[in-house]
Length: 293
Image (cartoon, rainbow, N blue to C red):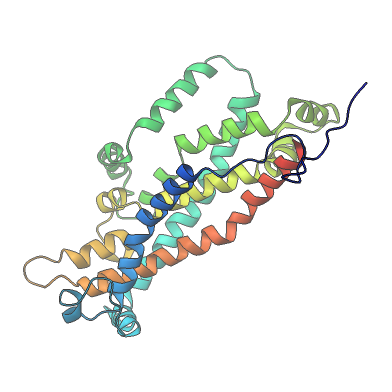
């Protein structure tokens, strides 16, 4: 015979005590948020100052030269900065999109198909996650130089298609979110593997694919070493390499600190907009998980 749980008169809740907030955890999150936001605030404040004010005024005191700095940056070499921004959007958007598709297909195959050497392949993949990209920049340059692809868009796009970490995340997400029974039912109805992947698996992987896309997009957007090694024409530069060139022009020309800081501020805005646009997919996934549990 079951007994009903009476509400607690002192708290107005059921017999289980209401969870108390963790002040230690909240404090650590606040410290982490401040640590991440302070440099962004500094960049914003510094981008509002002129060259003379940049080193002579209080660091976090704003000024009124933001739009003047943006105008000067836009007029530099007939708008070369915006060419860099378009190049960066091309590298990051196309590279992250194709890399997400490749990661999804590879992760699905490793999670749901049984084939010889699958465990060895997964261990090699984990080892690839630990290899920093800077180590591969020079070998990739030598390979692309033999193919005649250096100093082209392909030299930055092609190495971005394979992401060991993205494949690892896709495999983990498919194993947890795509039941084998759903795949078997689709195959029983006559669906081929490609149809199963595109019509059933991909829609179930949307939150995981958004995560992979964001990680890869940010990684390519902030990448410096690969395009720095691969590219020689400044019209092909992404914004990271282009701003570095403005900062290190040699002894013949002074460093353009104000333009570099203003360009850094403008380069952050697309990333913020992308996170705000795609965060709803994570919220939907969390809500669905709460309902299922």
